[in-house]
Image (tube, rainbow, N blue to C red; front, side, top):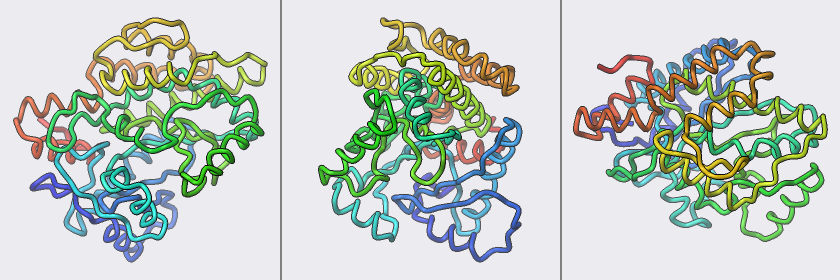
Length: 357
């Protein structure tokens, strides 16, 4: 974004070229890649087992991408939507060009930044068993990560408007129970056979088997305003995946919740974030957001303990509950300053690790 105006800048190509041409530390296991629009850039991190290592690399990655953006006259900012109106510019790439032509306004207006967490698996069957068993908990991740209340110059009324905008893509959202890797593959082939999708990369499920890595990829979260929150969510998702893997190995059946009920739970989480009650797809009814999150912490407690993450994740999640998500921060900053440009400048500072008064 342009720091003075808050407007998104079509600078990703310049950033990537500068990154390629600048002297680099060959031990730096952080990559930048292009995305659908030139106003977006993806930062890709290496796998980690320790929370502290991941957190430190997340902080380092944000500083690196911001330094590269500064070199071409822009700033990097961890927001899931642009608060100000924008007409994005397509990345020059045959795949992205086709998407702009094929998917109309959904692609042309698509400027949403998510946070994707990969967790290693031993086999596709284990991965599908995990996907079947984490689906009921994923709306909680939307509420915790919510960081997109503003779009097109106004308050959308959502905590995560990105989540709502993302559902315009044809396969976005929760999935039915698969039961096996074979059934997962059969379902993917059925969808690809409709001719609606460009390729397998457009299977935009809330959680999916990665095409390129032996991982389950959880895709529901907004990019987090704070790197610390991103690390907490990643550790929480790892614990959720580990818990599901153990349940699958033990033959514990997944909870039979309909896709419609999961869509409603995700919609409510996107709308209200942490501010209101959330549906409980497992127990039924609605519960306070804090109670739903505490249930998740209890559900994954053993996995957190074994990873050594109990204290850091529990304290981190409760800190988010107490101080609010990125969406809460943005609204508070807008109430304090009165302009969206000031919100964006504040978010730039937070992304770079500088406290905002």
